[in-house]
Image 1 (cartoon, rainbow, N blue to C red):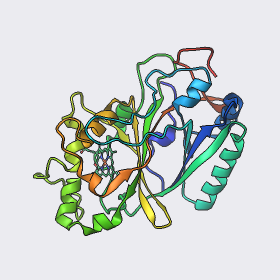
Image 2 (cartoon, rainbow, N blue to C red; image 1 turned 90 degrees about the horizontal axis):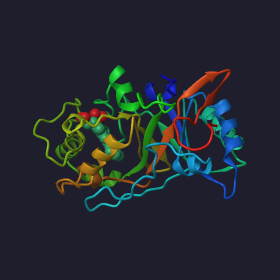
Image 3 (cartoon, helix red, strand yellow; image 1 turned 180 degrees about the vertical axis):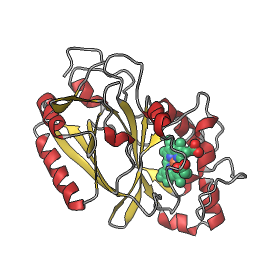
Length: 300
Ligand code: HEM
């Protein structure tokens, strides 16, 4: 299998920065992208291509599409498709700032930097509500099976599809809930991370229990808490071999199946939603991304 961008499978770093780019009107993105690819190693910088960029390159990637606005149920979620996504992974804020500037400068001829999200690991891998996040993530071969495309032929193998949503927490609403209500909303106990056997159907882990779907809906979550001034929440990031598992989970969360909405919505809301394709890396001298396994004219 082609090399996976290693940052996808590695543990969540201490600090992260997410850069979102849009295409400049009439710009030719090919050269700018190649320059970025020269410096992005797939580890300290995981790169994802959105559908607008792939189309501008005259390509299609089987399975890549815009983020849907409606997953069924009564809730309409924001879809904010962007062209290019960089997840910078590190442990020093200064380095991450310099890295962001460098990447933005490299692609400036063709891309606008629309948004930067500063993220970090909190405590022992907790969401800002204090709950452990990532407990039921698949590990090892199961993680690869959930997150990485294989057996699709071409050079789609080794790539990954990532769903990204910026969630903003309403800390006042969360703090107003009793600790029992908070535990019931998540479906786990904050104090010891134990899953509640009698959790209500609206609890987040009941909604998203990966083994309860047919077929099973496993994703590899690599979300990170974020903060800016007094605002904060979770930058939800889920890698999959397709978007199917993520979509199945989100459908249940919004109540499309049984009109029961995930209790998470009582204290947090997404304000963005985008899909990207993270190509495999090829180690030919300098690292380069391939855009093969796609329909359309010659690969990049
Ligand atoms: C602010 C938003 C969110 C927060 C704070 C949050 C938090 C959590 C927490 C605390 C857990 C329990 C521990 C664990 O297994 O990781 C969990 C589990 C999980 N969450 Fe979320 N989550 C959020 C959004 C989402 C979204 C949007 C999805 C997918 C559409 C999702 C999918 C999952 C899955 C698949 C599990 C594991 C379920 C299982 O198999 O037991 N989460 N989440």
